[in-house]
Length: 470
Picture 1 (cartoon, rainbow, N blue to C red):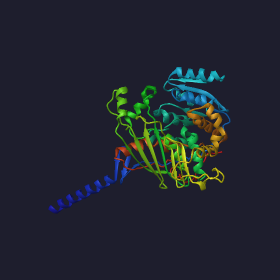
Picture 2 (cartoon, rainbow, N blue to C red):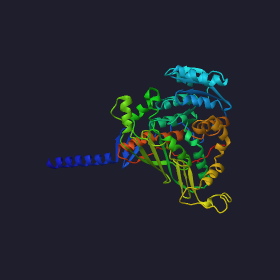
Picture 3 (cartoon, rainbow, N blue to C red):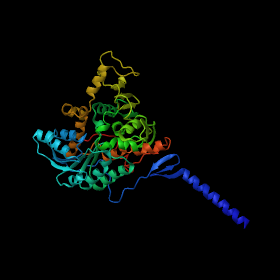
Picture 4 (cartoon, one colour):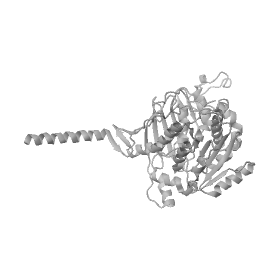
């Protein structure tokens, strides 16, 4: 009997030890697991009948009929920009507030001699807009929490979708966008306007022509003190979101242009990230004043490091609280050159990488400094991206963050009208948006590495090199 109890006791100890070891290596925590020392989110399998939309195209749409949802801070300008593009018809407008719809009707459409659009108002009216049979594209400019429900519903009703940044606010939402785009075979483009900034496009062109050598490191950010604007967000949705969410909740302005330059899911992929956040000081103060709360989840500064499958690194920063000058960083470091947008636009280039006769006779470049102002200006002019060159004058006349918003809309319509793959696909939307929840998980676990989901489900290496369709 004594031996039986001894064996039973020993067995229970071994079982407890085995269980504790298993929990140490693979512990269920919220909606992710910790495997070894890495946070891993589930990656659902592609369902039967669901097809990839990598390099996806549809038949050309000669006249793109658009319905706009959300006419607050961003929507009216989007409607206005579209009126400058040939082959576009604004067929429907929707907002919770009727006066916003009416203002766009009178101040934009009627003022330009264009017909009034169908009007939808109320919190659920957007569904009626998506159900119309005379709309090709639904353009979403609402608060973040409504992006995915609206985009999903629109695609399920046969519409292509353009959605403001970030496209999604959680990993689950990212997968929803990917799965529904694949199921419905509809375009879903995130409206990341910074990819169309003149400097970013020029730097991308330099990199793609080899003047920077092999890109090995990039930096991007959204550093923008929103103190003057917090009161302008409808029903305080943005501060409310930040109050309850840690991590980099708004990463795409800095990340998007880098991902294009580093060929993400076009020969490389983001593999692992680690993130850290400061305590909340200014954010907590603002929330106390505006919301009467004492807790604030979002740190004043969030810093994220990402490593790609090929070992390259990206640094991303988020700060909408401190008194720093506006800054998206945007740096490309290559083996033979460097591009930098903030706070000073400049390049470091090797003389031998430039065409013969590019430099003045007797002029030499210092590899430890930015090129002189005259060389920088010549680089910005002669290496201006072909897309920017094509539409530069009109873009600067129409405007929208210096013209980059108009270039973004122009490219979206151009690709739809010519049956081309969009510059940004649904996998970009998911990859660039997923940092919110991934960085929060890393921060919650003391800066633990996080395995980044592969939203292409293994197809990240099929296309070799990012390029704009022509």
